[in-house]
Image (tube, rainbow, N blue to C red):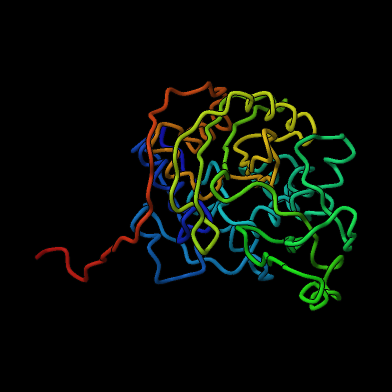
Length: 321
């Protein structure tokens, strides 16, 4: 069946990772890629390119409706945070058009917008995976060095390591309103990114974990396939709290022998192209589940290491030479 799939943020590492994964899955799928950047890599990975307005633009949803109708889109996949949040607040828009947006549970998406509210939810359930988070410095529960994290942020952007009280006072006016305080948990050598797929009842269907090293932009740069024996139980316990649906990304560190949850990304994340290369194609799972009703099962995956690098994409003026 020649379904048409729309992918937002197609010029970014998540967006073109999704497009590449869908091409690998089914050559007959028609891929529409959209981005605000006209001169981008996106046209190399999709069949149809659409220049998008910013999600915050007042014309955005009118533009999106036109694109959906023009290309008879069946499924829309957001690859950037702004689209996830905007689409979630406008679910009735997609319902009226009779089209399926790949959106996680409304409650999880809402909680992921604010690290303080997210932490409070874990605390309410006495979760052992919570990292102590506060809105003010307390020497009884915080010790230097510590982290200041934006309450609303992603991809490790805006995180500050604070070494002493004098440095902490520089951020006094922002702590609470815009920043939360956390201890430094574990170390960078034991940071894990796990992608899991949940059905509509938030039951775990499949998962894959990578031990990773981050780039300066906050994306996975080097990754090693790993298996953590307790992870299926951990994921289902967290799913019982947050009720995820579809592809969901969990980021962990290990403190002693205890997994600690850094954050949840309620969408397909930046390592999706790496996971696809090892046999975990969550974009394929999404199409088969949300369009065809086929529940994913744990795939057979290869093991190894992945290293990201810069590559050139060339668009020639002439193709007849």
